[in-house]
Structures are given as structure tokens and as C-alpha cells.
Length: 107
Image 1 (tube, rainbow, N blue to C red):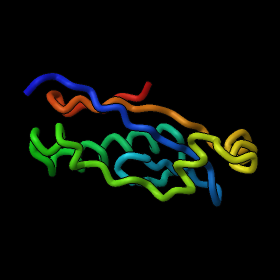
Image 2 (image 1 turned 90 degrees about the horizontal axis):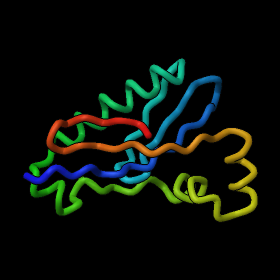
Image 3 (image 1 turned 180 degrees about the horizontal axis):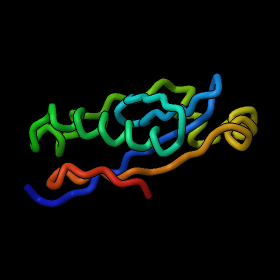
Image 4 (image 1 turned 120 degrees about the horizontal axis):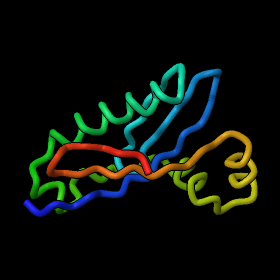
């Protein structure tokens, strides 16, 4: 299979004194007590999720399972209230999944 990185948009935020992260393309969500633990949990969950697909399914985009609209809007900052919330409490990142090495790295 050709080496192709898949770009995954991640939205991280703090809620109820815990760190939260959701992947907008896969709807994988994790919660942790620190940001480093959060990233580690997201890596583990995402790699486990992608392992359930064949290479052909990944190339065909079968892994895509969109997160709820409210998170996608926060990521894009389309509404004024979403922009204000994003500035106060949210951090957007991208991650790159390499389907050959089964490695996820944050940008």
C-alpha cells in the first residue's frame, strides 16, 4: 500500500476540570487529567480504531465518522459565539495518521 498520511482534525478543551479531545473525522473522544495524558490516550484510541480497517477501507475513507456538528463548528469558528468559546476554552490541533507505520503524530 502506498504511504499516505491522513490528516485528522482534533479539538481539545477543558471541561469539568478535565482535559477533553475529540477527533472531528472519526468521532473518537478521550478524557484525561493532563494534556500529555490526553494526547497519549488519543494516540492509543486512534491507532486501535484504524487497525479495525483494511488498507483498502482506509483509502476509501470508510473510517470517516463525523463528530457532532457543534464540535465541527467550534473548530471552524463559523459563529461569533463559537469563536468566543474557542478563544476562551478550546485548542485546535491537527494530527497525522500514517497507515503504513500505524503511527499518529500531532502537528
